Image (cartoon, rainbow, N blue to C red; front, top):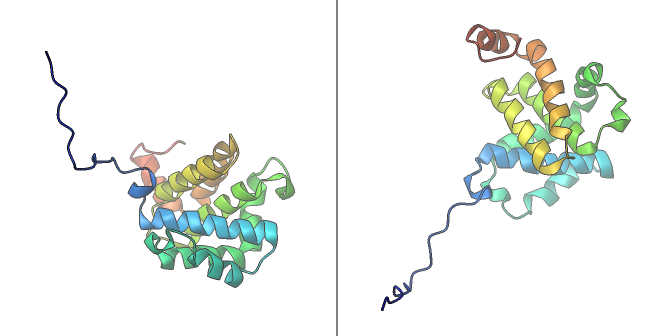
Length: 169
């Protein structure tokens, strides 16, 4: 007769969940996306949204300096970011969901101003944000727009990637 193994009094080890493995910068992008959504939809001021966002659960695990750069940078430069994005759209800006628009702002802002973030990292992070928070195929749209802007915003990096065979022509 086989006996069942004795149960341990220790709790079973849990594998870290998706959110447990996120970097502080990834978390900053998530919080910035939520805040920028409020800028777009609620027409709220960035400073007011900022106070609310910093009180959200998990904010302490985010890179607050990167969050600040994204929230304030994107909201202050929204018109300029839209001017860069608009030529790559196949529809009006009004037809773009606020999530995809905010994700594109983050990607364009990072490519323009956060030179310590490789363009491919920014692109991939934005695709993941769009997958997690956006519509069904919104990530494909975000990918097309940001990949289309990369040669303009990060020409040296894109060229180096092409020469190394890592980027599409």
